Every structure is written in C-alpha cells, then in structure tokens.
Length: 128
Image 1 (tube, one colour):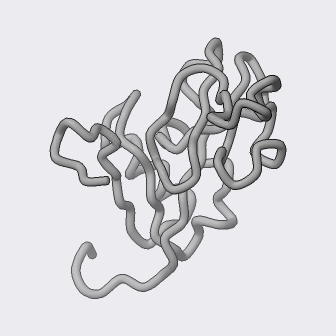
Image 2: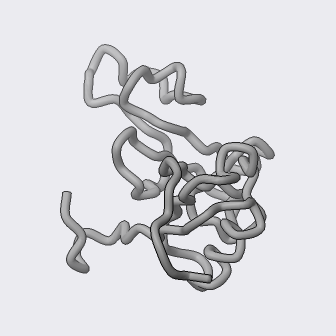
C-alpha cells in the first residue's frame, strides 16, 4: 500500500464548509476561497452580484451564500458530497480549516485512489 503508479482523473473534492455564516466565492481556475460576494469588474454587470456560477458566466466557479444548505467548499473537512465523482480518481482538495489527515481520510472514504492537497497561499511559495 502507498507504492507504485496511480491512475485516475484529478477531481475536486467538495464538502460542506466548516463555517456557514459568511458569503464566499471561487473563481474558475483558482482554488483560493474569496470572502464576500463576487462583483464583476465590468461596470455594466456590477449592479447585481451573482447568486450562482451560471449567472456570472465563466468567471465565477461557485458563489456561496451565508447559511445556504447548498454551499460547498474544496477543503474536505467533512465527508465529500461528490463521492461518485471522486471514486476511483485522484481527489484534489485545498488546505485550510482542518488537519491534512482529515482531508486525506475524507478522500479515502469517498473511494479516491490518491489525494493531493493544494496550497492556496500565494505568499508561501505557491505559483500562479
């Protein structure tokens, strides 16, 4: 166990957030969790903050709204809500909010063949 080649697709592990009392969002191609509501940099679209990824096009991956039961994050501090996607694949999660061992076990319980924990802190050696 723990040796040899691993095969599978990289899949983002999603879990319920530890904190549910704050708005947050993820941008496409970026694993950092930003606080607040996304406001478009396009002045004509800035009037309404998105309430879901589909309303903001290709910029926002997910908009979390405080106390919404449909929220998820990529930190895997609890059971994954997408085990069917993770099973047999490589589970990719983001550091933060809990121990690395908790993240690894969440991926393992979901049936992942491996886990990758991504550093989201650009000031600690991560690259854009």
